[in-house]
Structures are given as structure tokens and as C-alpha cells.
Image (cartoon, rainbow over all chains, first blue to last red; front, side, top):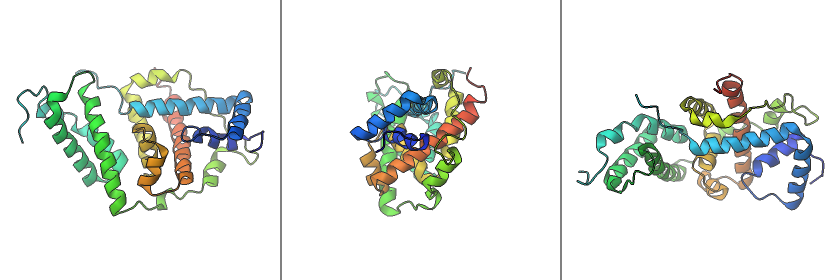
Length: 65
Length: 195
């Protein structure tokens, strides 16, 4: 795993971090990338939000009529 | 079948939730008969257990909890009897990435700032948009995503139930997240419906 990832490479690791334990090298590379890349940091937060939203699906009850 | 005399919830109250449950099951099973069966079993189980309903959660939340188990049972049965094909999910991972990233690996268009997305979680309408976005996913991709993120199953269980390798499973989940991220951005966060 190289130290400097492209956004494309980082995005897969960001996603896989939700589903498996990343290796030490993968984790280090991803951390470096996220520290300098606003777009990927934003995507990480969006994936986290997606998880929270999916866990709450189908969402709040309909308002009382 | 009669409901226990002590029952706090009657059949009529349960039936009110049928359309929502059916939609939930359909999204996951993509088969009307299987979805109908899962919902029916859920309502029967709920009726039998209704005296045990503690009222700590809403009736809907309680029913969805039962339905999730019924759906997992149905998925396991389906994958034994007729494993899902891969046809509709065979978009090459590189094609997907090429749509989002330039050749040098940078975003063609950066993800937008979603501001404070938490407010969306209080809105019924947001979940309808999420539902439409999930409907738009290929069958197997949708199933993997829902098993992982809606039902909260571990990746190993999902691979086993879908009969795929872990690597394929991670790719399906990656694809689902990328597609849903884009869909929500276009249909909700860019549409200015965040209030």
C-alpha cells in the first residue's frame, strides 16, 4: 500500500473501513489522505450519515392526522 | 387464530402498518409474493406476541423489528432455492469509478457540502427519497446494502447468504454507497429540501 493515495483509491478504503478491519498500512495511508483532502473527508462524513439514515429507515412515524 | 385476551394491540391497528411494511419488504426482496408472505408472517407473529409489546417503542418500530427477521429468513430461503444472478450488477467497478473520477484519480466534481444533514432524519419525506434511491440500485447491490446498513448484519453473514466472496461483497457495498451518496445529493441536498 503506497503512502499517497488518489481520491479514487481512497474512496474504496473509506467504504471498506465500514465493512472490514483495514490493515495498518491501509489505515495509515487513508489517514494521511483524509488529513489533506477536503473532498474525501466530506465523503467519509456522508457515508457515516448514510449509515445513520439507513439504520433509522423507514424513519419517523407519520404525523398524526 | 385468536389474539390473547390481554392483547394491547388489535389486528386492525396492525393492519394500518401493512403498506409501509410491504414497501420495506419489497425493497429488500424485490418479489411481490415473497414480500407479501414476509409481511403476513410478521403480522401473525405480532398478533400472537402483542401482549408482550411493551410500548417502549412505537408499534411501527416493533413491527419493523419482527419484519427484519422474516426478511432474513426469506433471503436465506431464496438463496437456497434460486440464487440471485449477477447480470444486473455486472457493472465493472472501473466504469463506476470512471464516472466519478478523472484519469488522475481526482474527483470530476467534488462531493457537495451537505451542511447539517441530521435535520433530514426527522423528516418523513427524506426517508421517502432514500427509499426511491434504494429502489434505483441493482437488485443484489440493494440487497447487500440493506442487509449491511438497514439490518446491521456483519459482512461475513451477507457474503454467505448471497453466495459471494468477501471482496465482491465490499465492492457491492462500495457501489451502493457511491450511488446513494450521489442520489441523495441530487434529490435531497441539492434540491434545497433540507428545512
